[in-house]
Length: 90
Image 1 (cartoon, rainbow, N blue to C red):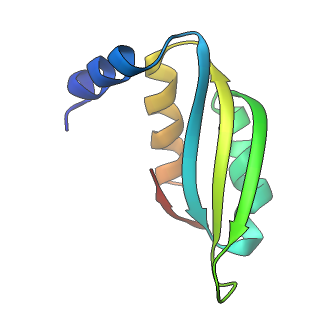
Image 2 (cartoon, rainbow, N blue to C red):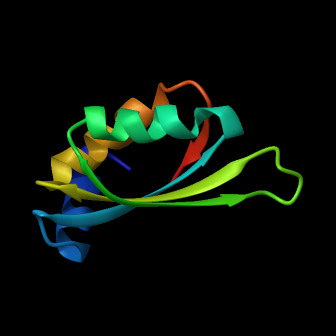
């Protein structure tokens, strides 16, 4: 999906400024780094929920953050994509 289509979809389904939930699968030692990366990308963290995988090899994070505009969501995903310890971001 190109960025304009993604932005249109975000604007249709979310109110900005407002809360957005990032879902990220990370390695256990990357949780703090990922949370600080999201803050560093311009989002204000409201809530973080962690759920370990059955084997403990991965952590599923649900990070609710206040973002100002749809472009900020794409920026956070872009930064997460290059972050060490991130397995996938949804």
